[in-house]
Length: 111
Image (cartoon, rainbow, N blue to C red; front, side):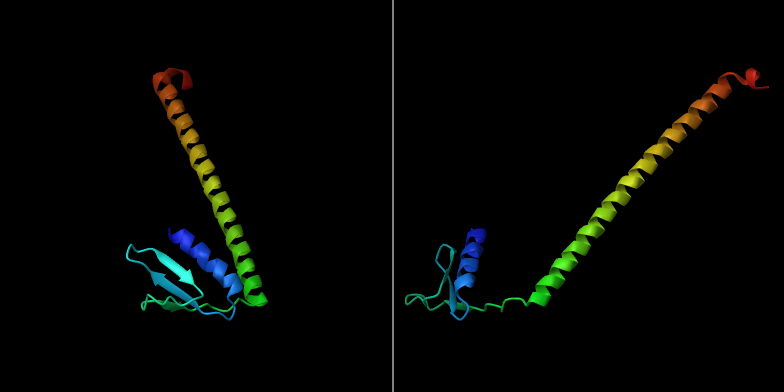
């Protein structure tokens, strides 16, 4: 329901550059948005619509998103490399244990 309300709000935002938006809540808790002030509901609240972001703000946000994506990819690569290193260490440890077992069972062959 909140998603539907947000969609309605954004639809109004597209056409309501200079219009006043009213938010009302009915007895069941449903939220409604309108450009017309309801006569029967004195609890209607005016929604503050922020101005559109400037081109510079949009570009800065896109750049920040790109940097965050690159950082995420780098972290994922590091995590993958660490997993590989741990697996290699486990394999090496297994081989060492096996060699130690083999040398303990056949001590006469080494000397």
